[in-house]
Length: 98
Image (tube, rainbow, N blue to C red):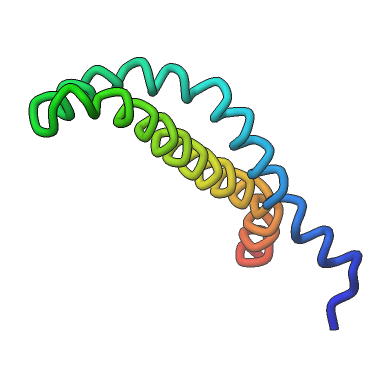
């Protein structure tokens, strides 16, 4: 049976990944938006007309934010799981080597 102490211990990497993703999104999203906004505005103007360019820009900001947040969370989560499993891997190598 899992105790609350163990449940909190298992949730720490997930919470760290969420906070790290928020910080990464804060810094990366403006760069991502500046680089890609011209492409979205051009596509929207050519295919849907100039009336929808501003809506596409706002929508792309929201979609880009979600994309950057989810990607950052995934990357940070993978790195944390790798780092936290290094001692287990070293112990396994030591056990196999004997």
